[in-house]
Image (cartoon, rainbow, N blue to C red):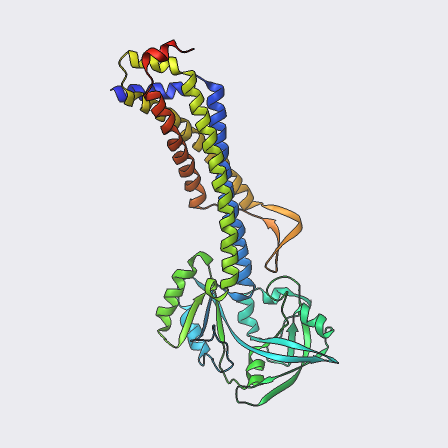
Length: 408
């Protein structure tokens, strides 16, 4: 019965000092809304970054011959790519897959020469799996039929000073030990954004590359794209179970592109530091307000103790007041924060000057609505309010009635 009365008094006390309660509530509600929006922006921004990065070239998962990722070799091939691909396609969450062939080569055009990375791709499967086809800014993508034609990166075109329909000579070592050399017609040039922006890359039909390198039907890599990148780790295990082949390695993009992943994680950590600073600011603000309330109500608490109110009951009164105010603030802040997240998710902000990150250009800032952006801000605000209310509540509980009633 006494507990119920204390709860009622605590709730009513929130509205006794409306301005102060409104100020404290606004601080907590604003903090909750900012937390929710910050988390939504982090999840949305980096989710967009991961999507662009993986669908640009890497894929969410890659399959190689064991040891190829650590030490690439022309001889480390997957000899039955179609069979492996069918097993991969049967796994849940797999959207598509694409086989690839890689080799370093020496490229010639006129009097210019440079090192180049040759990539053999299946034009049909690659178009379903990555954005390589849609990165061709000049000319067209390679034909579905295996012809002696190539799509080169913007950087390679500039180094060799070669234009569309020009001829490029490639020289490298074949898998059979012979010297492979051939002329290819440039039918397309990719843009300056993405994976090819800083590399000298030459794409050709996978059959053409296999013949050029005397590989037979072998491939060096199978890139896999999923319906949702969040399912990457789970799907890696499913693909391993489906393949049941110890000679093959199945790696998530976090392993394939470990350097990029570490840089991104460090960047995300910086965002969390900002959230921690916000938490400290809110905690100090709430603590200051509650302490002011205790000082102004010293006489009131003295009267309560003189009337027989136990110290624990006064302690709980202060805690309940803070908790009630925190809950009301959380409800308002969560509603505002999630509404802002929804707006940014649906419409985003279009930037006049795109932001460049790791060779990728972003022209829209978006947010993502997740369970974390809904629950975590509420937990942080509630926990912070509860913790900072303890010390003022202890001070109020220790008030000596005679001294308190003499205070002004």
